[in-house]
Amino acid sequence: MVLWSQFLVSASEMVVNGSATDSFHLHLDKIDESWVQKLPALDYAIISAGHWFFRTNYVSEGGRFLGCIYSHDPNATYLTPDIAIQGVFRLALKSINDCNNCSRMLTLVRTFSPAHFENGAWNMGGTCNRTSPLAPEEINYNGVEWDNRNVQLAEVENAHKLGEKRGRTFDVIDVTGAMSMRPDGHPDVHWDPFWAKGTSDCIHWCLPGPVDTWNEILLETLRRHASEDVKN
Image 1: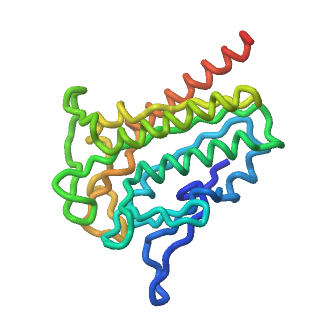
Image 2: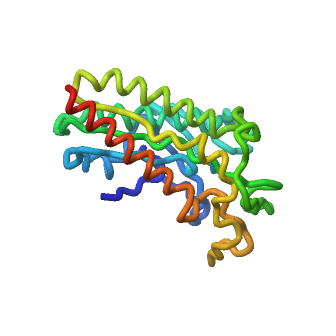
């Protein structure tokens, strides 16, 4: 079952003069019910989210406006994406823990998958035309992808502690480090979208290649948890 939710929480696209803006208003205290209502049917859930937060988004919680991500509004507090990601994953994992009709569910969070734009953003001439992986010492461990990964890990750990009493287990598919080494694994200019001619795709991945590793990590994680269940 594949469930599509850009932000996991309730979000509405901002409209100006009748036109969509590709900017959203996120509510960190209101979950997107479209995926939560499917939880009782699941024994396993994999949550994969991240890059939709890297746009101009307006963030609220508890009826209070917190600020904006990538906004130039001088009257709004500037927020970094990891602030929203932390709040979103906190609520998403809490919603799983609070599910009264759910079984003993294993929830896996895929950690943040880095982009590799160089010499500009996606719409400013950025490319990812490398043809070989990076060495470990070439990775920038202080980049935003690591901030996002770290808040995800913290929320998974908190959810796991709370979930143990309810028969819920939480873990991660930690791809951030491995994928940070693979700037050669993106489509780059070889994707030719009708809506973004001449731009490079340095966010998504090509197959076969890096994402095959995600599947291997997933399989090994499932095997490990199955083995632990047998021991218990």
